[in-house]
Image (cartoon, rainbow, N blue to C red):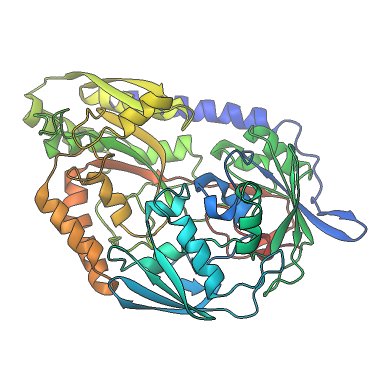
Length: 518
């Protein structure tokens, strides 16, 4: 067995070496890549991995539009992914009044890009609109139907229809658009971020977006005078543009391309790759095999995650016991991880399936294009080594949605692999919700009323009590039950020219007011 595993690891590593060698050819002649100069204008060119193919109006923000909205829109509060601390941006202070009500004291002297004043009335208008039940904004995943109002000119009152002990952690999802301009230009407001951020959108074409520093910004707009965003979906092309100095910054490079660019930034991620396992059948009842935690533990023990991270991710990430950021509420330091132990995996399978018996017909799925097929093939080969035989298929569209969101009594897939489960609230409840088979339509779990009550109690708490209750779920329920097999934090690999500086890089697109050229 050891020889077989070693051979597979060498094969994967060999393929990786070939890719790196091929990508490296012809990119060694790049300059330091200084920002372009046009009449003294300092321009940064950012080559993005995707076009703005979804609304980039600030009240319609979705998960993939951050590169086009964050530089134009401030938020009430920002969160540091290194330690989870909250810092005021448009809010200078905030407090929880009771379970349903919060107050935010707003920064004075802030203007929208069209010249409108930002005050409590303007903030309330945006919050009420973007959290309306029919809103398409990402924030409604965490806060729906908020009722915001101006207590006075710079005091914002927010009422939640349900208890909201972590509205401060949700606040980074709220963005603000100029009210008068938005109402006069309802169609354009969906495609144009008219916010209060350090850069304002000046020109939008089919091939690029041009942002210019907002001269009336309340803070420091930083080194650059303007930012030009273009897009190239091919990561090899983006890496080459950085290597030659054609662009100064890009995102979402593949791990094998790290050695082909002058400089990289890999901030600690909020996205985690994981393998989701079912424990119920289509009726919602416990499956005789999959509901046995010993079977799911065996699948976890059978995977050599560390070898996969080393060979498939080029050491740009590391395996983890919990699929959410260590700064999150509910994270357990030094939580036990299912390290590679095929002997232990087979012992557990003997207990569940019978001595020496195999399980055939396991079906594994993943979203089309979400991750390299090598990931799935490697996992399947590990499982085959211990006697679990599976097939893999990419799925898309309606079929993907049906599999990924089976409903609380739908038919869940055996296994679903995801490149990036996002927990952008830094709160374990976002991850634990996937196990709430009584309420969560994306859950593959049996309805366990005791677990549901435990989760609801944790969600209703705040502060240290919330952290303690969430940690108890992590320790006593999530880890031994193995509803998901965490793999690694999904690296968001940024690449830049050699003399590019980025203070405190964070996950996703951080605004260019914290970037410069040395």
